[in-house]
Length: 297
View 1 (cartoon, rainbow, N blue to C red):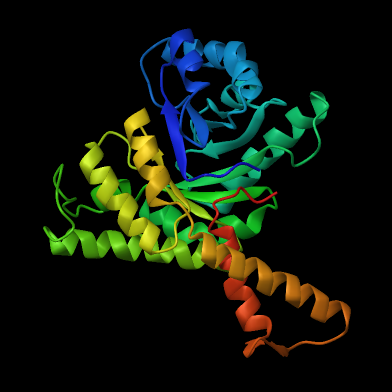
View 2: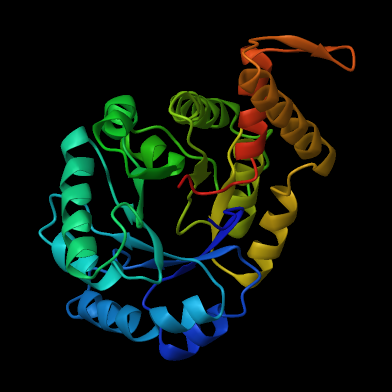
């Protein structure tokens, strides 16, 4: 699967926007079918996605589609437009309970069978944008085996519970209480996703780029693999922000490779180059490797 340092959001996109997205610096394109509630807007967005999704695939740009939540009455139609050979994953908006993930999984599986796709080919990213969703995340991740990553919108959670989010352009040093809460929300996501062996990404739609960049930097420090962006300039900046350290990746891959050789020989620990290699170190190495930001296949 393709790296997910940056995902360029397309909302209400026209043919020209899709054409430009084919050459984006972002690692993937996220078509947001749930961004506009205006009458007729969703139907137009679905038609545009059907028309242009193949071109994105031909351009080598992994495609993700953000679809309506399971209680909206729009999920089935959104998935009908989103699920295709060209689609790497769908992002389920406003996931709040395990049944939401199950409903999406069943609907996606039905479309995969109908369209001759490999079962499980289209991955699922449950979007957490509420306190209820964050509390239910462990059960949500245990509900189905389609998860490719976790998406979290921490500013939405902060606003929902009545806390004051940082103002646009706020530096991390300002509004310390707000940033502490955001750090807590993202750390909880990091722990839950990490326990499930999944990467996670952060999304902050509708805010100033400066605030999104500050949030992305804090998410990176907590182990996030990437961020949803709104422009090419943001995509380039986020790619740099989330670029994995080459030396750490080489070391992690070497540890994983040595562990596989040890296990083939029936050993559970060994010392290589003065360093002990055991299950604990291998878990750290695998987390580092996952930090490359790949959707889990």
